[in-house]
Length: 165
Image 1: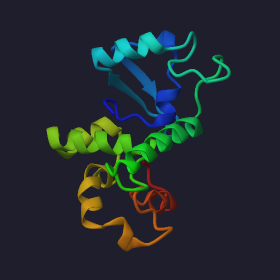
Image 2: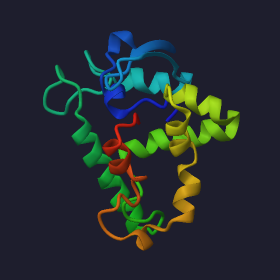
Image 3: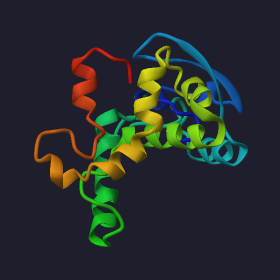
Image 4: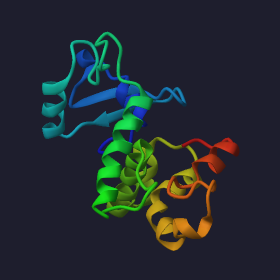
């Protein structure tokens, strides 16, 4: 959440490259960006990192974890919170963390800060992320009906238009 990286870019970080400040090449866009990892998070990551990957695969540490494995983990934890009525169904996914980072950056430093954090070239795309909490509050998921992307921020619609996320 601190970096605004996509889950795939987080998973692709090698242990040898893990630093407080580091440059990451985004797999989706090919853009490079500088990230800063908070010191306490860095210590935790270093402590739990595998020999090659910061997030090693469960069965083969020579490979990093997959996005699909992280998705299943997040959904498993979300079901626990749903049982406790802490969140609504469909509210959480790995990409939700990127949206939370955008919302926090927007609240702290405005739209420019959120755009820099997400490394977006189009401010309109950043606005979709930075204001996702406002949009979610205004449109209850139940009112949208099934198959509309409710709870996922309409990801399918954005991708269909070819926008970056």
